[in-house]
Image 1 (cartoon, protein in one colour):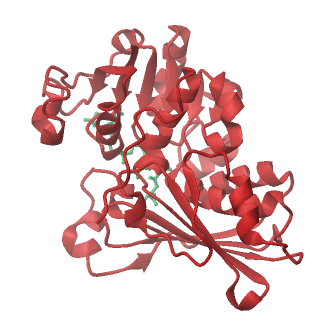
Image 2 (cartoon, rainbow, N blue to C red; image 1 turned 120 degrees about the vertical axis):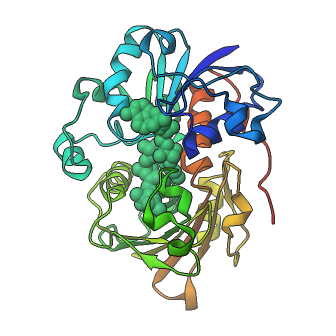
Length: 344
Ligand SMILES: NC(=O)C1=CN([C@@H]2O[C@H](COP(=O)(O)OP(=O)(O)OC[C@H]3O[C@@H](n4cnc5c(N)ncnc54)[C@H](OP(=O)(O)O)[C@@H]3O)[C@@H](O)[C@H]2O)C=CC1
Ligand SMILES: CC(=O)N[C@@H](CCC(=O)OP(=O)(O)O)C(=O)O
């Protein structure tokens, strides 16, 4: 059994890790932290977990306890993994960070977007960006993985086949994205209140969102050249889900866009290219680790439209984190992640 710990177990991604790991045959969750709920049993706070973790209780984050684990997930706000990851790695514990602490390679850029000094620049060189569809081999040998953000996962998976085939203009990418309210975390915020977020729809951070540099970095690396992206996120009155509508301008007459996507993702267990003409729904991936994609070329014109959906808490966070853990420990990549989505 692989012994794992979770730092930040009371948040939405923390409890999603617990839900998914309850079905993992080779993993045992032995430590889970929360400063505000220390001493409370996990199943008391989350009744859906009764019968799965009956003796597990939240404890204060403690490097000695966490350092006894084979791997530790950080499901915490930005900056927390910076403070603890070095100590854990020195104790031989692998680190899988769901926050953005190790996603950006450029330290001044990270500091500018996250508004704080980078707390562990010495660890950046060994951090692997945990998008298995791009970095699978590096993840297998990693001690420290930066799990991609939710929007960056949906956007990169949608644009990658087109950019790598040199089919679209890298200077004119548009990502029009929608998220559910769990994307904002479980902490109390006015914008997440029922009366604020329901029966309404709005864009936010149109002038710049912290996922922009992350998406730009990933796409530029894959394209091996500069790209220019307009990214506008929106908040929709749903609980889970990301829907990304991606626009690219064709630079060449494509043979068959559908075949391009199907071939590109033919061996990917968690990317589903839907039949031509499809419109993937967020509910088709609810609770599930799949990214469903559809590619369109309206009116046979110059614009290609890719529709990409994920569950922000699964392929956008905790599911992808477990996919990374499976790779890091040489396990079947699907373990703990096989259940289909909840529909309706
Ligand atoms: N929600 C989403 O859809 C996604 C989230 N992420 C990222 O994953 C991380 C977790 O997100 P989410 O679950 O939504 O967050 P939440 O706000 O729901 O939960 C945060 C958790 O971290 C703990 N925590 C907060 N501050 C500290 C600290 N200083 N030291 C130790 N633990 C702390 C909290 O417990 P306590 O305060 O009791 O210790 C809580 O359990 C964030 O970095 C987020 O950006 C990534 C992709 C998608
Ligand atoms: C609705 C809402 O606020 N969503 C969050 C989603 C980002 C997120 O979850 O952050 P990381 O993936 O970078 O950790 C936001 O836009 O900031």
